[in-house]
Length: 289
Image (tube, rainbow, N blue to C red; front, top):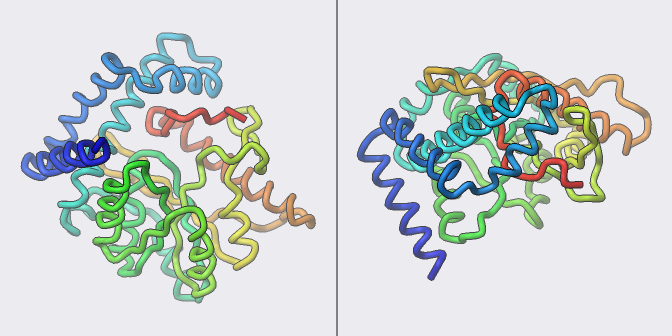
C-alpha cells in the first residue's frame, strides 16, 4: 500500500508539471528545496559533513550556503525528471549543449564499443536521451532499481521513450558486456561509493572505494571511455563536454590498471565538482569506507 501511495503522489506531481510546463516546473523546485532542507532535513547532516571533508578551507557559512544550493539543484533535477515523461524531442535538445559530441560519433563509426562515463551531477538523466537523439543512435543506460517497483517501472518507461534501453544493475550487468561486444554505446554513472572491499582511489585528498565496473569492462572489451558530465548553466541549459579518458601508459599489472583508470576518472570528476560543488549529489556517505 505504501508503494502505491508513493506512486500516486509521484504521478500526480508529474501530471502537474506537465500542465504548468518546464519553466514553471523549475521554479516550483524551490518549494521542494526549502521543504527538505528546513522542514524535513533528510540527509542534511551527511551533505554538510561531505562538503566539510571535500572543502576544509570553507567556513561554516559558506558550507551551509552550498548545502542549500545542493538541495535546490537536486530539486531542479527531480522536478525535471518528473517532467521528462512529457518533454518533446525538440524541447529536450534545446535544453542541452553538447560539446565534442563528434568524438562519440567517430568512435562508433570506427566500430569501437563506447562507455559514456557520467556522474550524479546537474541533470544526469539528460545525458543518455540527448546523446541518443542528436546521434540518432540507441544508448544502453545502466540504472539502479528503486525501492518502489512502480516508480522503477515508470523510470524505465521514461528512460526508454527516446529509443534507449535501460539495463538494471546486478545480475543483468552481463548484458552490458554483451552490448559492448556488439560495439554499442553504454552509459554508466561511475561516481558512487563502491563496496568496502572494492578498489580505492583518492577523491578530495581522501581514500574512498569506487565501483570498478567501467574500468574492468573497458579493459576486457577495449571500449573507449568518454566522460560526459552535464553542468547546469544559469539559464538551465546543460553543457555536456564529451572528453575521452586516456587509457595510455597504464601499469602492467591488471589490478593496477583498474586502479589507475578509476583514479583518472576520479581526478576528472573532482575538477568538475570544484567548479560547481552545489551540483553534485552529496546526499550519500561518499567516504563511509
